[in-house]
Amino acid sequence: MRSFLAIPATPNVVRFCHGRQSEFFDGRPVAAENLHVTLVFLGNPPEEQLADLHFELERVRHPAFCIRFNGLGMFGNTIHLAVAKNPSLQELQTKTLQAARGVGIDVPRRRFRPHITILRGANPALFTGFSGFSPDAPDMRVDRFALFSSNLTPQGARYDRLADYPLLPGP
Image (cartoon, rainbow, N blue to C red; front, side, top):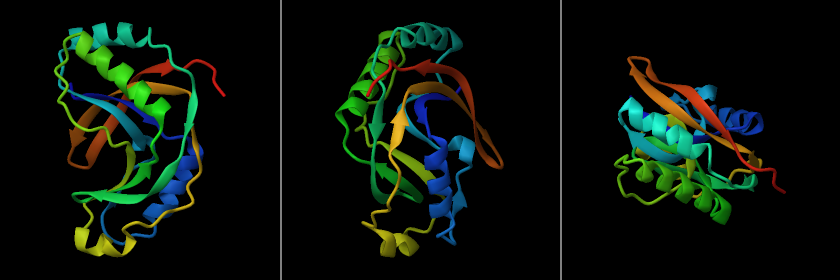
């Protein structure tokens, strides 16, 4: 089963993303329930490894924190809301990555570029005018992360939340 670890978008960030989606006439908006910041893409690990990972993730201790967004960007044909550099977010990503690798999940090595994808299938040529645009996005309080499954359908991806992992109380 395709799966990943992510931070679900909070309601205020979902509202903000929907406002940005309406500014584009090209591409498919990402549904509210699918808005998230990916920590680790796990691929298709066997269910036994996901069960082992679940127990490891329940032991992750990390304080809650806030993230800021610093503009819109584009990867290929997707438009996203970029996350500003954040040491606490980087630490959480490292802990979850180590947990996944610790149970034998073969996670590809790639640079962590946190973002929330808001639009898919956009024409890159139409996006050039928005490059570097910095929206006044609300901060997002991170008090949990989750394990999701990803099911590809003809209508697009459907994400199901399999488990939540609360963070420790923080500032």
